[in-house]
Picture 1 (cartoon, rainbow, N blue to C red):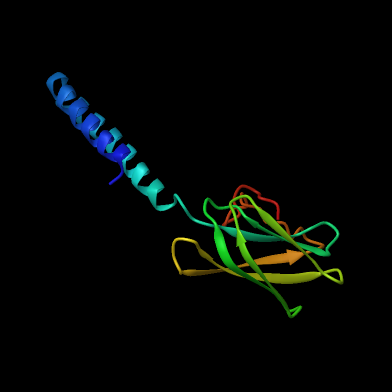
Picture 2: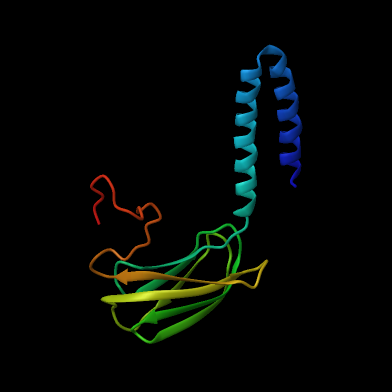
Length: 153
């Protein structure tokens, strides 16, 4: 358990006991608020050091940009461009670091399959990204999974 979580438990217990003298319902409200804060710190701890490697195609359709948008170093990165039968390796990428791979010909449509692992663990993560020169093959982290409210493709 992290020291911030321990401090939050102690402060929450003291606040609940103090609020119980005022009103029992007020103490329950304080308990729910501190419980939600504790849960958010607990969830944050799981995603603290995770790499996230994304691929995108530049505007000239000749360059593949591989970027680590995560919070940890990604290592042993293997990128395969399907169906172009092109593969390349990147040793490691620090957070917010990017590597550029230039192709001989322009790419109309392809899919980049990326395999990488974290520095802390040997778990291999595999993700794929569509690359298209005509329909905006740029990775968009804000694109919703389910298009709602007239989201444009």
